[in-house]
Image (cartoon, rainbow, N blue to C red; front, side, top):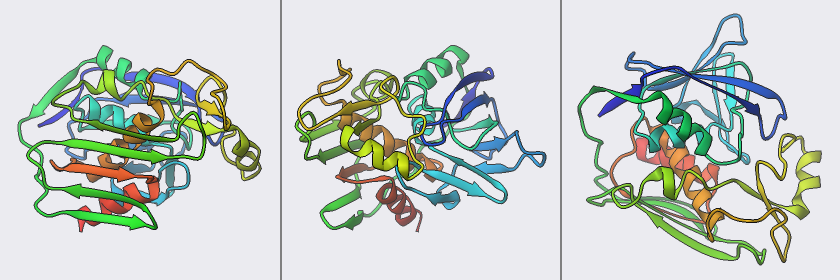
Length: 270
């Protein structure tokens, strides 16, 4: 089923990596072009389709490029749209990075719910017919034929507060708004200086990301006992949204990254 939002939504915030303040307007669309970004700060207003073909970079976030336009850290907003069932939207943005907000998809979800959703036409998602796997070392992402849509994710970090975590989620069993959307991005105290010197996480703070050292969280409490792996699952859904419509399948990831998420989407696309 194709659907869009009923009213325009406006949110502002700081980009995780750029540190720039950016304004975003989510606008209704029934153009048949799916979800796409419009860089309204550029005279030519370049349009950037939210499709895997637009992916240019996957280092600590997913960046889309089309012509003269680019926008990065799109995954949380895309996950929110998919989690709410929105498949068509024009996203007007006056900067090069989607705001991080509180580090989760919750603010986007709440704004979309306030705006309302309207159906454009009926239809069903494609169904995956054969298994697909991409991997790098012991990291992998797989899509397995399944009668229902399901996502399962595992992480293994050498930091005591996280360690090994697994989570499995199906939209038929739990509401995305409750089970996945509130999970915030996370990072490690001993990597902050290195990432900042590399020109990254300029907009990161204890207000928009969970941070831990080897022994403890620096800014508790967590929203879920396994909030980190739930956030990785959120990222996976956001990246798979770049398929246009996520095929019905069971998606299983272990120690994966935006790079592997996008590689799986490309493999599914063929």
